Image 1 (cartoon, one colour):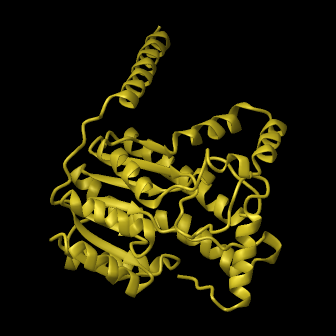
Image 2 (cartoon, one colour):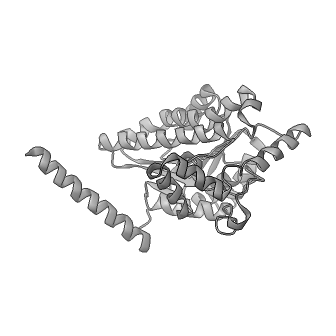
Image 3 (cartoon, helix red, strand yellow):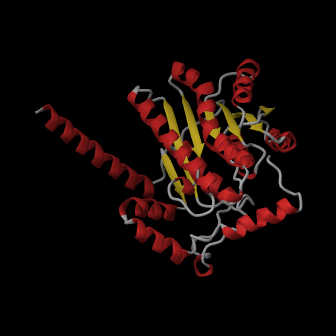
Length: 315
């Protein structure tokens, strides 16, 4: 009898969740105020990180900016300070666990306790698997996935004490479905999605309803990270690379609305569902039609040319 009651309650919750999601699609959700919150953004010297910093600053949050490129990070800080926001910068290598923990201790001592954590930093090797040095493969997994564990272990305890906080994971559509020749990136982003979802379930199970999480899964963003990547030319106008500002603005709406997950654009929900529902061969046929099976080859060729000219850099 208890099982039947629980089943009925689950169906009610399920129906309510679906209806709520539909309503939020058409109605403007209520956005929370983050004025005065302390927000830490990793990869703040990059294109998306800089835009996230500016958007959070406009909302009144104080900022802690992490990046391995000190000059780029300081440039972001200068732009943020022009908005009248308090900002602190730290040079951190996210591939090194001890560097994360030591810098996190400095932040707590010098600035205060972080209440919004935006795990934005990401890298990609840009080499085919058998041509890629092991160190580059490991770096992709360390920065894109392992660092999420270390960042969360560093800052979640205080959020739990206060039952207040927000953890944002900037993953990728390639953490929901895969493509060829970027095994390191896909593996790291699948790991990021799995980590984020499991963490969210843990917080819910512990009734820590004051700690929110948001998973961001964008299509390829036009930051230069995947320069050269292209799908079938007839479809490029339908699914073009995303503008960085649009990506960040859509992400911010989801964060401030405390939305658990957002795919950008919404078309990315289709291949995500197709991967789960269709046979493997059907997905392969779709990828081939769209040019997804070879879309990364021009990107890899660009990386090879830069490497041969000595222009590549890890950070």
